[in-house]
Length: 207
Image (cartoon, rainbow, N blue to C red):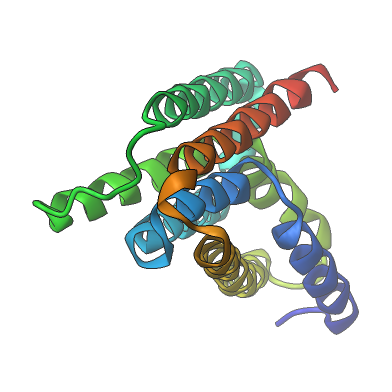
């Protein structure tokens, strides 16, 4: 069903790319530093669902659409960058608070999931990986769809492990340095990470 040599190279490359800090992972790190692991777990799940969306689109041939309308990729990058900057400004301005909405945890979870989903969908790294990168590892002599299904499933599992791992690591860092007097600094650090993530998106347009 798949070419083992191609698959081995893909697993190594896919894991390296998934672990490379980009806008999506920086978003998760900033949120986990600010709120902790469990409140941000829905956002991490949203990022995984965003990847799942592109994996399904890849199976449906969306790469052809993206190549036909390259402007869509540019718009996606700009929208994603603008959203990250808006979140950064909100976090920096709330330097006196450091809490989750405890009155409505369900609503907070939905909000975090939606944020993660939106950031993932607007991340050009996610788009390009599933729509353009994975097809490069397909063996042309084997059935196309089964290969894509295997590659996408493996990458989604890898991405989930990496994303939740980053969130847990950031939460551990937060617990280590957290003090009531450093709430403002935490928010500013989280906001700065988001601005850096947005910058990466914009720079990718230039490069």
